[in-house]
Length: 469
Ligand SMILES: CC(C)[C@H](C(=O)O)[C@@H](O)C(=O)O
Ligand code: SF4
Image 1 (cartoon, rainbow, N blue to C red):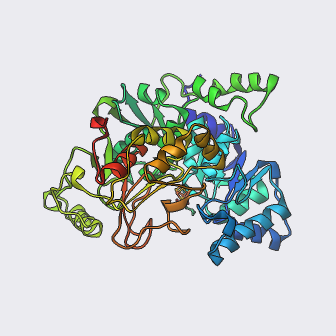
Image 2 (cartoon, rainbow, N blue to C red):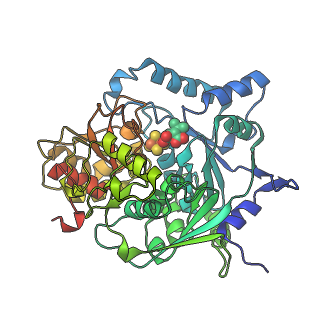
């Protein structure tokens, strides 16, 4: 019997048809739908007079365009309001397994909502018209983003036309140091392989440090697989996966649960399975990370200084470093810990789960926001995360520190709602993208972990969280 990778197993169990050139028709188990990439797809169905092939595959919520405060005022921006209302109308017309509309207690970022309701399960193929669908790979699922025309294709046929990617193993062995999180692992990996390093691959994250991560941490890691250029990220099934899922709304129950766990236990790469590429990192070598530029690969340990473009031998890299420093308003050789921040954002599908909020609150407890920091937004990933945090009193810790405790949504991760940076403002952000203008035109984003963001809010500049007390 040949040895298979987890990716082989997930892929092969979903092939409906395979062409001679390797192109496959893949069966899709779970289709997550948000307001941004679904309107044209629903429109296409309407024009063709089609129904959803399997409406019980659809789990939907509004996230990108929903405001995070003053919910009683509804959605002020007319374009955002139309998008959200269009999703309401489409779900009403076509149906879904579950829909969590604006203001529902279960509303939130689709990549937080799916797992927390047990709608993402091991062995599934999971798609969404959203690049960060890779998040769901944390459950030993094959999960990735698709384009709007593919959204319509999946709605109409429950299948996707796709070619298998190559398989990459990113192995992180050892024990992460104090203050070093899954976010730092993700950034360190991207720093090593680059934003194109994973192009053409599906990445499996393995090794003892990955096994040691919580499910939330694994989601953070898989979430950023796409920023490393990969099609998907995934982590093998283990006891933690089962423990996280047990009892969740859409997870199997009773006898079905036992059967499911028996099958899920096979969702690991066989010993001796061959990968097309292997990348290795040592957990002990990873320090808290901070991006200094306008791409997630432009990242350094917090102990470093801002790089000097003149030190780059490659002229293309030199030019991109120069441009990044100019946009970011940074001088070469500035210690990262000397960089002041204007705003702090703790949220997004990368870092807005309960564990992230607990970690941030642990740093903040009893302390106050620096006067120089204009705004600190704490945005839970879903209504359920918000409620849980409030039950634990985390909201009070943040409010007492002078932070703003908001309603769930994508918020300042991208400038599609009212939360955004003004030109020139610098932000410590727990999100996943630091492109020019990502958080608002002219805004400057530094990607960090929740702990590092919280500490920057208190200190007014980046600090090495390992020295925090
Ligand atoms: C709006 C959506 C299509 C987009 C994505 O695909 O990722 C967004 O979620 C993002 O993070 O940039
Ligand atoms: S939180 Fe950010 S990265 Fe995640 S889906 Fe929303 S906009 Fe995209």
